[in-house]
Image 1: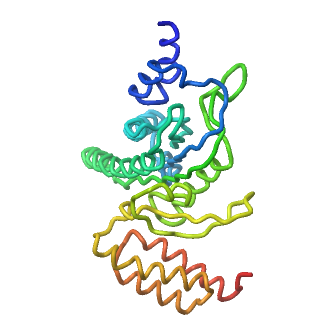
Image 2 (image 1 turned 90 degrees about the horizontal axis):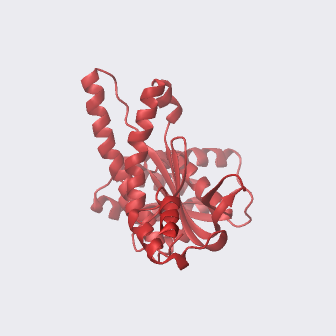
Image 3 (image 1 turned 90 degrees about the vertical axis):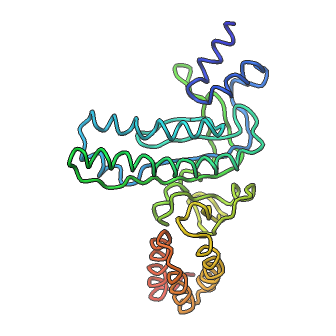
Length: 290
């Protein structure tokens, strides 16, 4: 009973009650210390948090963070994820530890979609409150980055204080991918190692070279995360692929023309992304890449 109580206390704030019950029923599946295993990692951050926080008192900001993180955390736990830590307005979570989850890539992707849906509900609630109080309202957005790979996971830290956490190169890449979500104007960005384990259709965004890595990595978004009608997406896909092919071949005229054809489909959620590529093409015309 004492051991069960310790396990419940240790993991009750990190994982869902169902996972805690599984750990208690099978304590041999819980290894303290560190182990290397494949994880799927998720980083979530609020867009323009600094400007949002400047307009609030300390009490209002605390309430805002609680209102935001509680439902997003519930989604992660419902999808069998483990919450690693909160960093102000940000969340780090992972799947496939402490218990095995054969569907860890799919569960992380579905959690991201659910989190985006919860944000729409929250914005409706916040807008209603703002209108009632006579305050202006600006929708709050989030960015989510997901990546999979082998990491060291376990009780990490010092003898004085430690957390059940994950470290490794793929953890860092997941964090970098989350940062790119703002650059591309996307809510969800996925690394290619995560995409390889998904049945959900994706849209390739870019080929990136992360500092400290010698090999470039492809990044994607979930098609279902783009606010568009299915027929519009179906029309966009071949045009988008042709644009990327022309861009990578340094055929700037054709790439620009392809962007125009992509824009003509009329998917507003892709506007920031195509703005970025038009800006890059303008730079490469003046100073071609190696």
